[in-house]
Amino acid sequence: MPAALEIAVTVLILAGAFFMFVGSYGLAKLPDMMRRLHGPTKATTLGVGAILVASMLDALLVTGDLSMHELLIAVFLFLTAPVTANMIAKAYILRNRAERAALPPTGRPAGWATLVRGEVPPVPEGSIRP
Image (cartoon, rainbow, N blue to C red; front, side):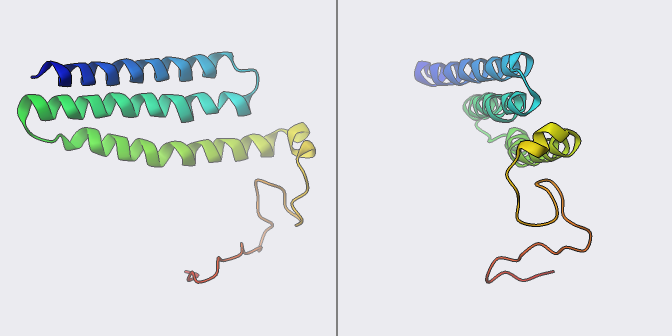
């Protein structure tokens, strides 16, 4: 393997490790749950993504084949992390009355994290309702 490509893999691994450390540190040290949520969903996801890209690059350089395992893991991670963070944030808003009271009004009977029973969310123009 050429030295420049080895350096690229090393830099990606070190950058990934740095971002995973920063995300884990943020998860442990930030003061409240809403701020603590950003550590694993932002920095740690970026760190894991960098390590997966380094692994894909290393497999491509060593074997000559593109490894689909890392690509599938990265796609799954980048699709599920924001959805999970959104669900955790909504659950936090529903459970914490003080936080819910501090939010601005939504202009409808339900709060920020829920729909009123029977309420149908608006459909964007041009989309089809299932």
